[in-house]
Image (cartoon, rainbow, N blue to C red; front, top):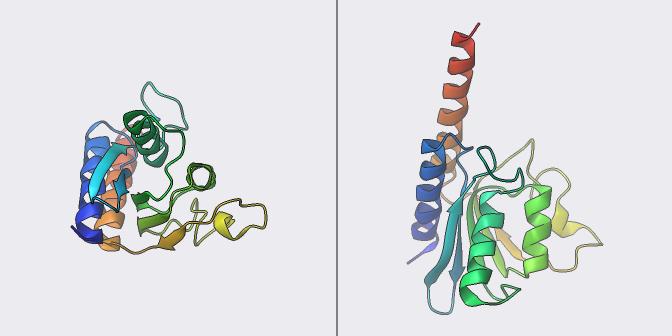
Amino acid sequence: MNCQDYMKIALKQAEKAFAKDEVPVGAAVVDPSSGAVVAKAGNCGEHGKEAFAHAEIEAMRKACKKLKINRLYGMELYVTLEPCTMCAAAISMMRIAKVYFGAKDEKGGAVVNGVRFFEAETCHHRPQVEGGILEEECSLILKRFFKAKRQKNCRKC
């Protein structure tokens, strides 16, 4: 499988989040040595879980639980949206080797936008980063979600 195939797996998680009225972001943790998808998840912070239950956090938690380890040395993370500051910090702490993301997040992103967490002097571990993987598809699902939200809220007026 290639980067786009793994991002499609993350996109399926984003679609599942969308169906649950969650912000449609999906993530997958991949073991590059075997090509196996270790864990995958979508955002689940809006309905019944913690606000910090972002797709990246949930996928990394699942991967650690499945592998019975506390760090994800050498693993890759595919996520449909540029990680926020919280998720970038978690990625660093988990020692993810490489992050692939789809859509840039000019407002909330912290990798190529915003605080650029991995470039900070205080960042203990800096993964390799590659953005723009299936960027159009990753951006489109978010646009569809927020357009539907605006239309729904407009009908209430």
